[in-house]
Image 1 (cartoon, rainbow, N blue to C red):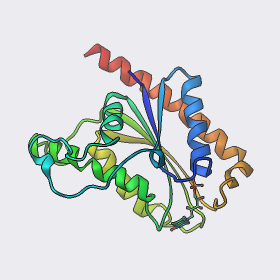
Image 2 (tube, rainbow, N blue to C red):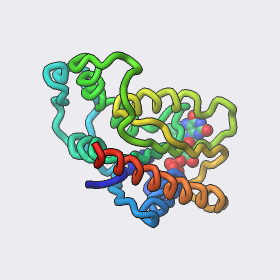
Image 3 (cartoon, protein in one colour):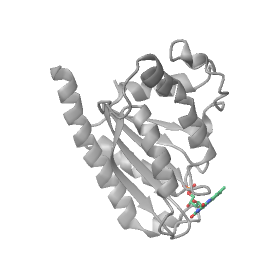
Length: 203
Ligand SMILES: Cc1cc2nc3c(=O)[nH]c(=O)nc-3n(C[C@H](O)[C@H](O)[C@H](O)COP(=O)(O)O)c2cc1C
């Protein structure tokens, strides 16, 4: 079983969020976690068609790479997600990915009838985001989207790293403090995940 699933949401393979997430992954691995990485840009992921075939059994009718990432994610105790800000939200790749989890939302709230807001967190989440500008509300919309995505996958937002003023693909390299922070956050998540894993094996 993989401890942590790390999702790269930017179309830039070596851009700012990708570099930060790679450091977080390294921090987690150096502290004992197994991590499986997925770059959304490289996957075949179609957008939700809103046909609600999932109302039957919670399964999405579109068969593509979604199922393998979903299964890995649901087995893991930790989730790392990185997306830059695109028009005050996540990237298109990340949003398409999130929308496909509507099938799980349907399973949780419509089929299993979990009362809203009364779910037990099963995994710890870490979110990285980067934007070019420095506005106070830069991450507000994205954090709301993230909150409801993490809710759907029974994940509590344990920590986040939100960076303003980074635009060119290698801008983050001028900020070793941010890269170090990402590494330490990854190490911290590894510790959290080890605790969660211990609790799971005790029940
Ligand atoms: C389509 C698009 C929309 C963007 N929208 C915003 C925005 O609303 N606010 C902002 O501060 N930066 C915006 N940016 C800039 C990116 O957030 C910035 O370049 C970031 O560093 C990219 O991260 P990456 O290197 O991980 O891809 C946008 C960039 C693109 C391509």
